[in-house]
Length: 235
Image 1 (cartoon, rainbow, N blue to C red):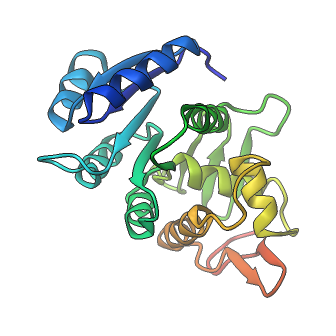
Image 2 (image 1 turned 180 degrees about the vertical axis):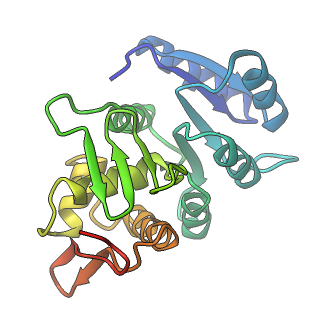
């Protein structure tokens, strides 16, 4: 995991920006701040995309939803959204737009740091695992975290969706419980009632279907999910 990862905090409250930046720097990260979408665009234009973006949804002017959509259309950079506590709809919409995780406000910076570490850890390839996988017409590279179809066209997955897919391709034919998937992709201490995994599963299934693998991941009632031979898959 990169201990000196570059992280941009997009938050309109100057005190929150300062506190988060100071804490990130104390942890060894390179922190930059932006008060909105325009400031983030300037940073990206001059320095490129960072290793991770912390994005407040409730921004004046262009809101975080719009920024998330724009960023995800251009980059797979991990995004952690900041949401109002109890606002399930905002959280779900943010995840649907491609965010990788969320932290509700008000938040403890220790929790935020833990989430950052978990997301960045998921982006690192595992050295001892197989690097190349085939799933029907799809070619999956675990090292570069890239997936493409038979024609070489990239299939766009967020980091969370890619992590889910890797869980399945590394364990073909095994039933994986929801709790196992949460632990493997989000950490042992994650909330078992967190709906993030459900949103990411829905998006992953849809994208696999669009790539010609309808029904690749099947639901096993009261047990979990299994990667099965999908419609259109050539084995």
